[in-house]
Length: 542
Image 1 (cartoon, helix red, strand yellow):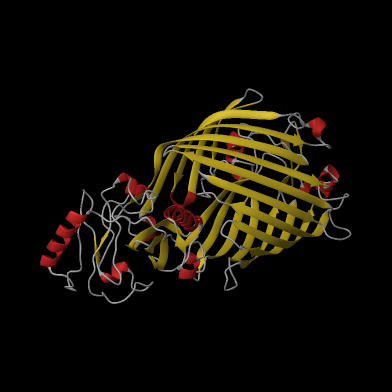
Image 2 (image 1 turned 180 degrees about the vertical axis):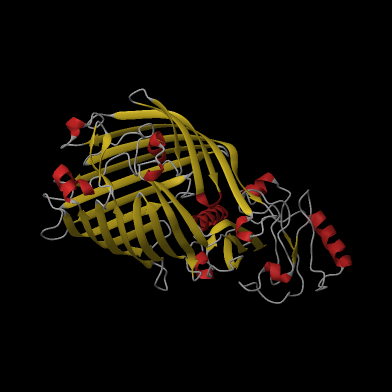
């Protein structure tokens, strides 16, 4: 068995091995500024889909060479330095041919880390995502696992098209890590084309263009090279919204504490004042806005480890409605009032070990959200707790299994329809896209089986003029799924036949995942009413 059995490419090509020769110094130990490539050595051989190359580059302090034993391995040495003569190389290779290859089994000490390709991103932002650091000593298995997890962390930042981590074995117990990233485009004017309805499928029933929201979200990602995000929103159409958000992930040297501030104003001339038979009841004022609201807030975040995050939020909301809303539903805001102002406090705990946030194939995810709307007299009295748990398992190169549980409990929302939300909006049962299941509490379970028709892969398209768009990612999956859910509504349950009853659905779909975390899901689902429908979605199912 190959000594580096934890490295997948070594298993694929056991002929790739490292030999080390004694000789004069090449100018000192490698550091971040003078890594192996600075000395004239480069990784050779085929580059598989993982993070390792088949033939591992070597060289620091003393020269090291690879003996070619198969296709994809080449012998390369510095042509200018003239450290060894061709005759010495012949003798050296003959000696190793007699003695056989040398295998390095570790443990390995991380002697240095070199970051390449980060034209804008600060090096400390990249190093923060690594699960190892210079000076660590790791077994062969630990080294592979930590390199792979670090690569996933870097991609989940959303700053890079690709991220590769290449280990260079300098000796039996020494490894040098080279990180190469390909940065994305960070100025991103994202066109706004939202549906006033809960989802695309509901809007498609009417195809009413007046129920579209259009505008632009102008993002500046990775501001100052520190992964800061500035977002400006200008939205017109059915709902008008103007907002500004600024997020700073880290404000301290240890890169643990972060802040976010935001402010927004919104207005619209039509609202949902209730549901009957799980369909929305609309109220509209053609000549004036029926509702307007201001919201300002801030958030403090803490990330002590790579996978665990905490956040504490505070916000102020000022919402006003027309008298016609109060007449139709006195409890839309609270107690027959046409205006409410309230302070909100919130806490969020997140545990995230998914391989990809955009479309997870393996890993675990959990989130707990506690919100309190209304602090003090003359304010709403609504408390809600939401919890999400999701797990994905990858089997082989094509199969993946996923399951998720989602639940919410609330107190006081039945007296404030403005603050009540069940299933059919952000969270929904597949196959029930045309229905709204409002209520105070809900449970939602989802299960997926994915088969990769086109395995995840990145392609280089050199004719594209901008480097940030030359790397194209594509994966296509066949998806079989089932959903289960239950909504509790103690106030309006008699008017909505789908609540207070168990609901389920199943179906098949085709999921397409491409560059910049774009997802398109095309699904055929059958719900508990034996209704079959074709639906489109633009986010991952969990």
